[in-house]
Every structure is written in C-alpha cells, then in structure tokens.
Image 1 (cartoon, rainbow, N blue to C red):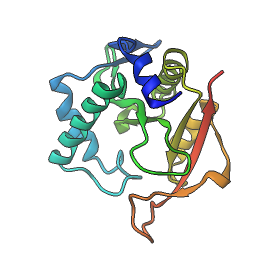
Image 2 (spheres, helix red, strand yellow):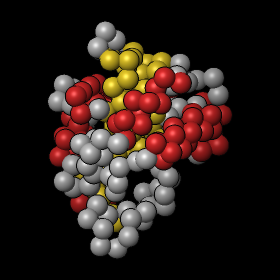
Image 3 (tube, rainbow, N blue to C red):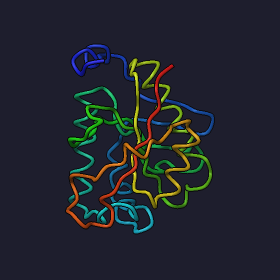
Image 4 (tube, helix red, strand yellow):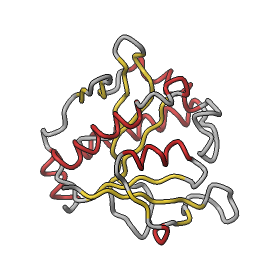
Length: 192
C-alpha cells in the first residue's frame, strides 16, 4: 500500500486505545513525559541504543511521536498495565526514519521499563500492534530491527512469528563506521 493510500485509509481509523488481556495501549497524556524521560535515561533500557537520552532529547522524541500520530494516525502508544503501572513504556508502529534497502516500510518496536521485562508484555502488546497494522491498515508487511546482541528483543520478534534472513542484515546509516551498534538484523512478517 502506498503512503498516500495508507494515509487515506487511516483518516478516522486509528483507535484512541487498543486493549489486550493485560495491557492498554493508549494515547499520550502530559503526565507520561516524565516516566518516558526516565526510561530513556536508564542504562538497562538503552543498552542497545547509541546513548542515553537527555531530558531535552526525550522531549524532542515525544514531539516526534506526536507528529507521527498526526501524520499517519498511529505511532508509539503508551503501554499502561491497568492496576500495575500507568506508564510501562512505549510500543507501536512507525514509518522507518532512515533510508535502507527494505524501505519504505513500517516497523514495530517497543521500549519498556526494565521492571516490566520477562513478563510477556512486549510480546502481547506487539501482537496487538501487528494485528492493527494488518487488519486496520491493510499493511502487507511489518518489520522489526535491532542489533544482534539484543537477545531479548530478538526473542520477542521470533515469538511474534517474524523471520530473519541474514542476507537482510544491514549497517545502520545513522551510526558511524566502526560503531559497535552499527550492524543490525532485520525481521519481517507478512500480513495474512
């Protein structure tokens, strides 16, 4: 589906929230920004990113997320765990923000606080995001990417039924030659 057709299909199609058995994927509120800033400053959460984000960088990232929602009708929802945490992290669908051989494409990604790892939340939320992408957006494919060492995220990708072809591995163009995180692996899943 072309970007123009996708945007036409999206007008009025994005839900304010997506509910799963344990999660609420919802729109952002002003009180979500401080825990988002804290997540982006946590070395455990940001282990496979080039650097921790400053408060200003996190605020700019939140503004980019809002702009993505405005343009495309979807993006990174806040992950709320009702009765447990009003903000556990972010998870959603994005248009890839850089040139790559597999672009243009839509990526599913997640960034949960470390206390919410290993409980199936990323997999549960990402399944809902994939369903939204395939059922509501009629996407033909969704990708996910990370560095080879990010075993936790790769395990989620595999649980989602995504597959990797080593021929699709790539060097992230936003990182300099020789950077230890430049090599990325790509996972794909097709709509049914």
